[in-house]
Amino acid sequence: GIVSLISLAVLSYERYSTLTLCNKRSADYRKALLAVGGSWIYSLVWTVPPLIGWSSYGVEGAGTSCSVRWSSESAKSTSYIICLFIFCLVIPVMVMMYCYGRLLYAVKQVGKIHKNTARKREYHVLFMVITTVICYLLCWIPYGVIALLATFGKPGVVTPVASIIPSILAKSSTVCNPIIYILMNKQVRHII
Image (tube, rainbow, N blue to C red):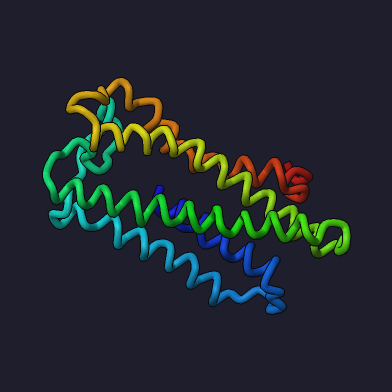
């Protein structure tokens, strides 16, 4: 989950810089490798702490998957959950909102002036990425709400049964990206 969200935030910045900052450089594989590697390292930094004592992991919902122990009442655990939400949800979502907000504004300003093929392709990629982000958020927001209720709500407010659907929805978000890619990519559709 964290790797996906951080990757989407990095991708939003990449789209923003490509379309608005007149980035004339061709594909830079080192930059792409740094972005992917950085996303994984950032995610690792935030997923290792429960293994070394800052909060903990446990079985969630119906016992089919593991996650942060949201209902732990210790100050250590609560501080980790707050930091996790800030650095692995709020900030990446704010980065995406800023980048896509600026992009949509720029697209609206440019409008019909630049209608060359390369720009059309860039706008299509932008639309595909925005669709991916929206699907990701639709899958993860219910899980986030349940996690916050379990952390800050009354003890027992979130039953294992109530957490099953948001958990399954969140975990299934990885299926959305290939489906979106297939539906929105003409070359892939022609092959299939």
